Image 1 (cartoon, helix red, strand yellow):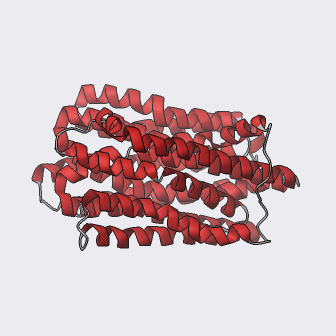
Image 2 (cartoon, rainbow, N blue to C red):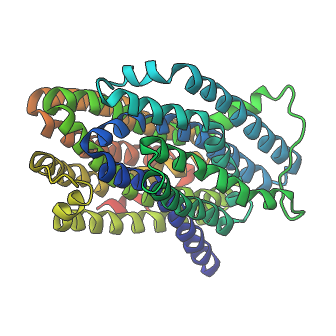
Length: 445
């Protein structure tokens, strides 16, 4: 029992710190862009950062998917298969990253036009989008390296890689946008260099003998490729859906509140990104432990780790909601450098409604992570697809038609609550995962 607790808090703490550092790259861009370029720059940024959902989603598809499969195989003593899984994940990430790079070179302007950029916002959104897409192979590859290193027993290095890159991003944001006056291109370039720095930090580990995964031939391994994708699909949808939600919300909010509404949502979305990084850190932190325990056939340990994750998520969700209601005006003011009263009012109200979702999101992330890590990808996919696509799009459109912009905010906590109910039902069906003396549903009462 003692080693379970020790590993849990070790992996969780380092994963949360790393994810907070990663979220800090976007938050730093938001702060500096809002300060330097005002509401127009903030609106342009909020349109362009939709692409991060796809880029990071692909990184997690092959990172989480590959490393989960790798960890289970290694626990079962299948070391040759582990090398094949790493190689497939690596080559796939480079292939998809190359496609996105070409998209950035030739199609960035049509993409941002489709996302709603127009007028003076268009060139800024186009510049940010083009820069990020051209560096997309590095973003995807960093996710793969970090996930495999974490599953190989190196959570500290994974954390350091993400934190150092994020700190460098903040410093470069300031240097590029203020002394050098590079505008939104400076913000984009600073963010784009973050994964490059992270990869450089990870590289020595990949060359060390204690590293247990290596590149090998992967010809004729299509079945293994699809297995990797099945393990990583839920993580992909969770991340990719953030870009879809951003797009749908931008279009709905533009109808009801114009560019000021989009700027307000930019503030809310980026603050939410930081909070979600905490829950993502918990779910990704427990994944290596869950996969290892499951691979060894230790279902009691699976349930114990999962129960600790649920408890921690519930406590943090409540504290975050209380803090939001107490400090909402100050949080919004940090990004409202023009002191726009309309922007302040919309963002404050939206923040307080939107953040109710964090009472439920922790459970949803934990359930999805457990199902994926214990070879229940169908349940994980269904939960992620509902909360990230079908449920949120349908509810946002319906609620916006009924209650305007308040309905858009309200759709988020509603879909998270419905996802929680679905997760509880799936937990009852996943009988092999359960431990009779630790019923999950008791954590939700």
